[in-house]
Length: 474
Ligand code: SAH
Image (cartoon, rainbow, N blue to C red; front, side, top):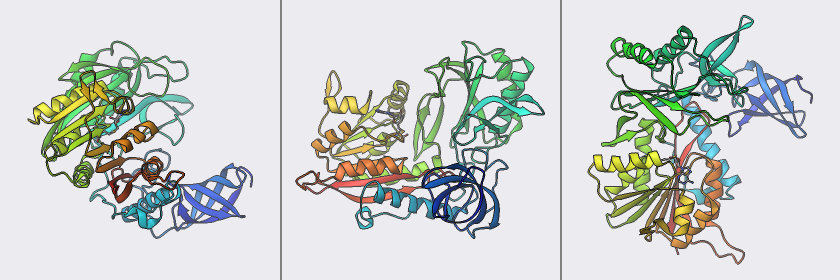
């Protein structure tokens, strides 16, 4: 097959990343924007030896699982890969994707997994409490136009997005206010190639329960020009919009380094405090711009409730919450455990976690800043605190999963239960294999998978969150 060749193909399956999979001329084709059940005309974009990437040019016969996209740029934008799949079918796709991953990468039999039905969402739009818009230029009429949006898949080309269907409506006037301010005062957008220009990204965060909104442009400089004027313009939105949202915080994140990292280490506050509050499951949390906080609060409450249930707490347990962020899972568990020890690599998040425990009157949590693999493997949370034996270890790592040495240390500790919260089924599969593996003599680690609970935290996107419960059987 050659580049730009046109083929007709029926889509039989879907890849983990959301592309449709079909066969033509004995080759597997990964077809962007084609869904399971579609017959499409596809253009080959990248031929390889035994497979090829292609793009859907025309839908000849639509799948019965198709629905119209809500967003006009759903195909170009790299965010919503499966927006044209009916929500029920999205849930089926994710269930299958998780199962396939665990079986293929983890080497488990389906009957080992004890998979529970995926927990979906009632309204799979406008659920995100955080958005990071790249600010840059798009080509227009032979010239360039200042724009905000999202990157097209696998590139850093900005696709202009006025009103992202996953975020609250208030984001749209906030983005517009920033762009107008930049045009008015001739403030440039950052250019990745040269490292010049001022505004790199716009971070917006909402507290869905509190209604508080934090606006935080990421700048390549020490001072944002005419910041007071910017704040005045932003605050006008508070009067216009429905009372649901209030911009309560405007701050700037300083990032002067080249490279892909969105946020720098420093936050300059400008209006209000450089954080917002939100409530989950009756607990209040302070959230700073640099701290991780789950992006889908409606599903997050369900996720944490399932994690607590999996931990099987009776009140006597010593619990670790590794990769704890601002201490959300720790505080959910603390109400039912003896002591909870949280470890997190971002110091600002640990500050938030300590504050959050105090604010909620919780006294049996302890938080330490550092890499989980460093602290737990060393056997000390800090100079004064040796790691006590844990009865329950909860881990919630980023996509890359847990460091192997951390897994070995957890295994040596032999907690009763391991609750693995994962945002990437592939690394979950890899780590579950290590946690249950048999050695050369056929001796198992002593752990078996009791359940795997998928939770749809990212509707319309191809990602899926899971909670795996492992239990010590000796
Ligand atoms: N459990 C939290 C956070 C999960 S996200 C919640 O539900 O909100 C993963 C977190 O792991 C992030 O806060 C990230 O900063 C942190 N992290 C990344 N690498 C780490 C490491 N090596 N050790 C400890 N924490 C780490």
